Image (cartoon, rainbow, N blue to C red):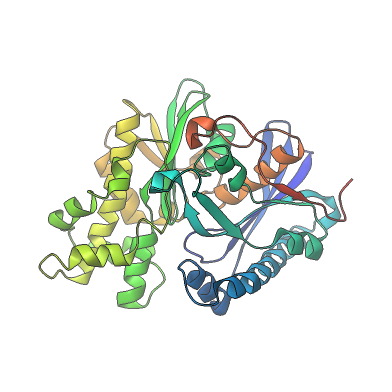
Length: 377
């Protein structure tokens, strides 16, 4: 297939690296040509985490981290192109989601006037260092139009995974989980549904000094505590109806510890197992509340590689086929990066990138700002 080359970049809630994906698109057809997981230094990861909470010298630290993060994004992009033997001048655009450090949508209890979302990774620096026209800052136009600014992936899910005659739900289980409901070729709705890996990752990092529970091995050794699970499921975000979006501001260890302080002590492994069940149950309940019958649940993001998590989803949803998006043609690791490559193409073609049925925006909008590179025609 010949066509335009687009490069997508994103660092997610877990801040565990930059996902880089090179997409070749012709019309409505596209193919992943190359991918790269580009690491972030420990110091840069720590700087990003620190910016996710208010603190001293915040503007100074934000300005420095914004530039350093863009440099890391540029390194990832250029190394991916070298790996793929593609010249920067051959790439039409980079679509950079950047790194979210704040997400304060209306669904989080903020007034429309005070709602905002902020992603960093300076696109000016990225365009300058790569020479490639860069499209970035995708979320804020949707929020300005009354939307949540997230999730943005459902529109891409519809383009990539919709199938006439099937009701499919695409579940992105990253730091936060979100669902896209595809009834045939129609995108019915999409929304954040609760925690993905963020609570599990933070819990195992605190108690075992490991970045994540590989394949759910630790959680699999314990039964979840039903009392704790019931308390977790009372989180007010879960009771909201779509459109809604969330982030680490809603689901974090401080909130979890407040609940645990009201209970008899539990083994830390039991808590890990319960956090996994919380992810599974909040996802399943949300899916069932918004669809009477689902033919297939297809998972992308890091959760797709957690065998215990996938097994629990299968047991919880016995009437629904549970698989990863690999079965639909895209490796679950790279769906989000591919999404922002696709969105960059939409922006340059003056086509809308949001889905008002998902975000609640008053209408379709062309998303993002364009930062010309040397390759700009």
